[in-house]
Image (tube, rainbow, N blue to C red):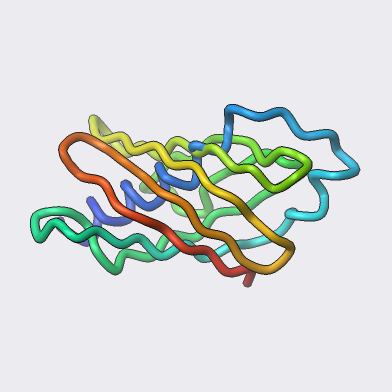
Length: 119
C-alpha cells in the first residue's frame, strides 16, 4: 500500500505540468517515456518511488493504470503536473531538458522533490 501511495504522489508531481500550454513543434522536444523518482525528507511520506509517464505533444499522461497523470510541458521545458489515485492527489512543477528534469511536489501533508530521466 505504501508503494502505491508513493506511485500516486510521484505521478501527481509529473502531472502538475498542466499550467503551461505548449505548441506542438516545441513540445515535441520532450515527447517520449520518462521515469520519475520521488523523494521526501518526511519519513511518513513517499520516498524513492518511481513512476513512469509519457509526454506526447506537450501533454503529460500516466503509463500506469493505477495512477492518473495530467499536465503540460511549455516550450522552455516548464512542467506542471497533477497525479491522482482514488482520493489521493499530488501536484508538482519543475523543468525538463531533452533528457532529464527536476522539481518539487506536494500532496496532503507531504512534499519533496522529484527527478526525471528520459527512458
